Length: 636
Ligand code: WT7
Image (cartoon, rainbow, N blue to C red; front, side, top):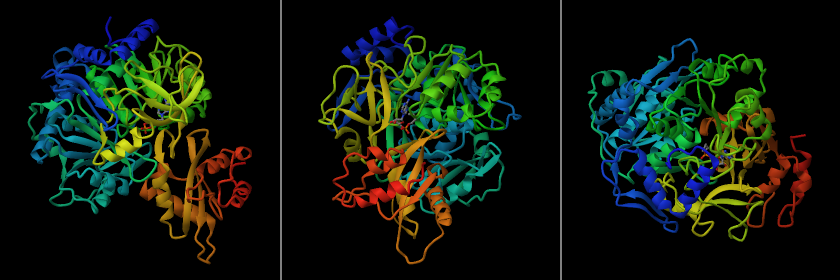
C-alpha cells in the first residue's frame, strides 16, 4: 500500500489510523516516497506547542524548485507545466513546458542575484495573475530568498505596511493588470507605497503597456535584464526549516500577520494533499481559480501541482468577462479535469442565466473543489448538478493561511460527500473540538471550537518578527492545542462541518477581513466618533459588511449620502475595495460592557435580523441604545 495516493474509503481509514498511531513514521514514509533530497533528515519531528516550536525533517537539505522543476526535466520536459489563459479570450493561451519554465526561473533567479538578492533576503511581489508571478516565486525559492506576495488588488497603504513589516529591499511589480474590461495601473500604487518605504530596487514586468514613471536608480524594466541573463542557475541548498515565504493574513486586532512558512514540511504536505484531494493523474489538466496572492494559489496553483509534475492552469481574468460563461468556456477549451474555486464565485455564476453554463461541454471534469468559506446548500447543489452533472465529487476543502495546506476534505471517489460538510480530516491531521471550559469534547453529534492537537508538516512556524503574537493568537486559548479560530460541529458519523469564525474576522467573497483595520480606517474620517463592523448574510458574497457608526457632535449636520461615500472611499484607499461597507447605520451609540468593550454579539444579531434573540443584555452600561438600533436597522 502506498501512503501517497488513496483510492478508496477503506484505504483512507487505514492510512488515517496509521498516520495517527505513528505520525512520524507516516510522514517519513511520505517524504521518502516522492521527493528529491540533497541530504536526508536526522529527525522527522521535534515539537512543543507551548514555546511553540515545530521542526519537520530537521537536518535535511533540499531545494523546493529542484522538486518542482529540475527533477521533471527528463521525464516531463515537454509537458505543459503552466497553462496560461489570458484575460482577453482572443489572446492565445500559453503552454509553458517544464523545460521552458525551468529556463525562465533560472534566468529570473540570476537577475535577482545580479541585483544583490541573497539567501534569506525578503522580496515582495506585487503582480497580477501572469506567468511571471509563478516564475518570480520559484526564482526566489531557487536562490533561497523569502518571497512575500502582496495580492495585486491591495492599496498603497497595504503594500507599504507589508514591505516595511518584513524589511524587504526589492519589489517586483508590473506596469498594470487586466481585469475584464478594465486596465489597472499597478505601478503607480507601488510608487505611492514606496514614498514610505526604504526599498533599493523595483523590477517592473511589462504587461499592459500603460504609462508608468520609472524612478532613476531604483526602477528597472525586467525584460532586458532577463534577455541577457544566463539560463544556468544552480540551486541554493536549503535546510529543511529555512523560510520559504511570508504571506499576510488579517488578524482580528491590529496589523496583518505575516505567516512564515518553511521549506521541507510545506513541500511534502502540499504535494501530498494535492495528489490526494484532487486525485491527480498524469495527464490531467488541473485548474484552481484562486489568485496566487492567497495561500490557495501558493499551495495549489504553484507548489503542490508543480511538485507532482502536473499541468496547472493560471487564469488572468475574471469569471464575468467577456460574459458569465468564461469559466466554463475555459474548462471546455482546455479539457480541464479538476476545477477548484470559491463558493462566492459559484453563487455569483448561479445567479446568471443557465445558458452561460449549459452551452459548454464540461464532460472532461472529474473532480470539483471549493475553498475559502462554508458553501451553502443551494450553491453546493447548483455546482453538483450543473457543473459536475452529479458525476464529479465535490471536495469542500477547509484550511487557512496558517495551515499551509488542506486539512479537512473528502477524498473524491472515496469519501461520500454531503452538502456543507468538509467531512473528514486528511491523514496526519488530528482535530479536536473544545468546549467553553477548555475541555476536549469527545464523541459525535457535538459542536465546539475547532483545534488541532498534533503538528502537521505545513503549519506556519511563526508570525514574522513577532513570535509572541504567534503564541498568543494560536496556542494560548487551549493547552497544547493549535486554535483555528473557527467553530465546527461533528455529526453522527464523525463528519465535520465548519460553522464559521468565532472571532472578529469576517469572510467576504472568500476574503478573510479583520474588523479592526476596517474600523481604524473608518475612524479616521473627521466626522466619525466610533464604529463597529459586523458581517451579515449576503446571497453572492456569503457575508457583506454592516457598519454601525456614531458621528462626532460637530454641530454641523452632514449629508449622510456623502458620508456613506466618503467613508467607503476611505476604506478603499486604506484597505481596498473588497472591504467596503454594503450597509451603514448611523447611530447615537454602540452597546458597551462596563469595561468599554463593544458587545458585537448584539450588533451581529441585529444585522442578522435576529433581534428577538439578543440574549442577556444585562451587562450593558447603555441598554437603551439597543432599542434604537433595532428600530433603525437597515435590513428588513
Ligand atoms: C478561513 C481561513 C484557505 C483558503 C483561503 C482562505 C474559512 C476556509 C473553508 C471551508 C468553511 C472555510 C475558515 C478559515 N474557510 N475554507 N471549506 N469551509 N470555512 O484562507 O484567508 O487564511 O481564511 O477561511 O473560517 O479559518 P484564509
